[in-house]
Image (cartoon, rainbow, N blue to C red; front, side, top):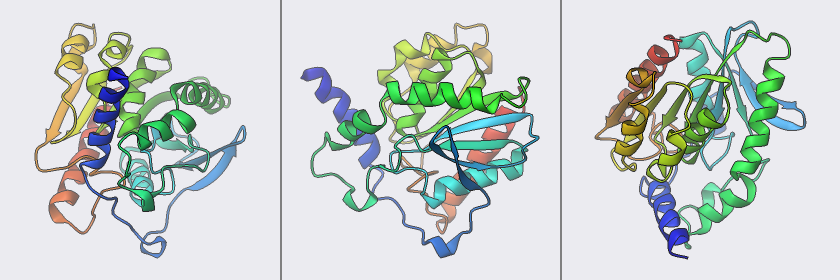
Length: 257
């Protein structure tokens, strides 16, 4: 119970402290990609089918239909010349924006464990990695995760040897995944909000690996958790500047490999 409470505390704090998600009406942005089914799984995909690098993007707890997250995917494709696949790991059952913040601090964690546990994500990533490479085994893969999925991206970079690199954007509970850092097999980029959990121990572990000097870390001191995904406020100049820099960092990092 003590461990459960501690993990729940960090999950709730990282997820809730940034505030309620910023609602963008569907009429305000027209997505460049589309949702297709891959082995029965809904996947938002965008980009050139001939792209040599495919980036798997894992959404935050609010799902793949959040406009800000799709805007990120569309812009990443435009600026980085990649193809993006963003799977609906929650299978149509993300945490409802209208219920946020939760009255019960454990509610978000319980929701993730029920519909987006590692066992589920592991199977989806294994399937998606295989499907993406069916047409061309030489396709390179990278992975990006937002919020709770920032720690999932860390775990995936240790569990699979498919990825050339991984990126965690305002990842939550990262300090609870130091053991996963020990297994990481590729360089990683960590882009953190001011209120995200510290990654000092992860940095220490990754720094000892052969690719340790390629792992990068940046904190945005004026940003709160979720500033690139569901809580991104495109009308706020400071938030927009931070998002612009996130794209700059992602582009520079991805193009190294």
